[in-house]
Length: 86
Image (tube, rainbow, N blue to C red; front, side, top):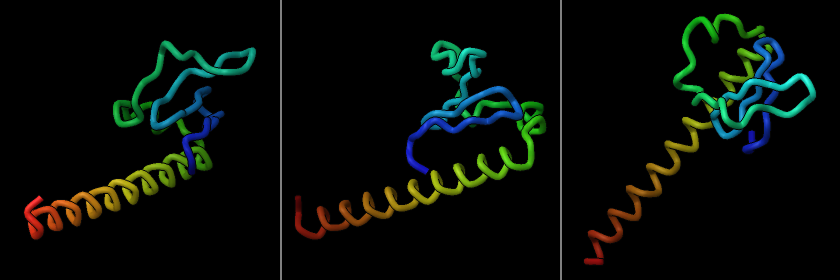
């Protein structure tokens, strides 16, 4: 999943770059009321449909994978810098 807008119909919200926003009736979303996904409470998660829940799980899994890769790259660069005295 890229950083596209992910519609979460079951909770009337959209998610963009890991931030959840209320979806507006006329389309789009309220950019001033975003909440980071990791700050959403259990009640919000329990209101998700099965499909939206799978979407969130997939998003979290992909983000965790990206973070692991970034960490490995940073470790590799750090080790190279240590080996070559940079």
